View (cartoon, one colour):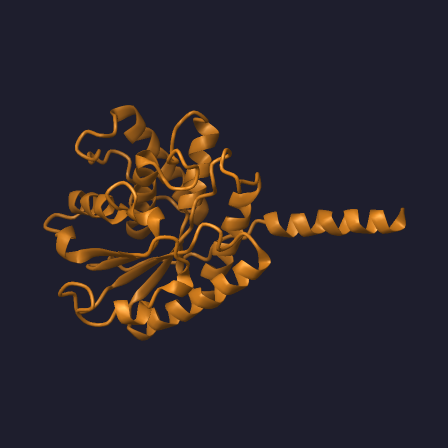
Length: 261
């Protein structure tokens, strides 16, 4: 009986430590002229997140040419360890860009869901971030979303584990964390029937990609996406568009504890 009680108490406290709320350090990004997304299929689904993001920036900044300035390097099923970031950010490694001002790093979907994976995630995140800083560029971490509840690897507390892991690594390395996963979670809380995931339960659907792009935009530019006209050429209806913009605004304002412009 004593052994059972001891195990129960240990489990209780270990669960509490996983869900412990850790606040992100405030980190502002200098307005970037060139941006590189590095990740996997979570980024390249639905005509690629970087394409949606660049159109939002083009609407926000007069004269900005996203085709020349925003790029994406993705490997299906990859984790951070699979990317050669130091090579990707070297002059003219991608297009004619001499230097990327901002590199956004997206880890694998399961990369933070076990103690072993989190240790590996933290190691490779630091390695890449150090390379970025040595290049006199800025880095940001893209917090992934949790699996949909019908996916075989779904667990109810996944978003808390993801949140804690990304926030801790972001704070340890002094970089911005973009709270995409929290935006998915809040959207589902407010509209449980909205479809942010693809049918497979892991990849983003179009609305999920749009929400992610809004969250990236708000996090980087410290600017509310509410009122943005971009709707993927009419593919996203007005009701969904406004709802997702409001979610991105609320999540970034709350996570960073500041008022967006």
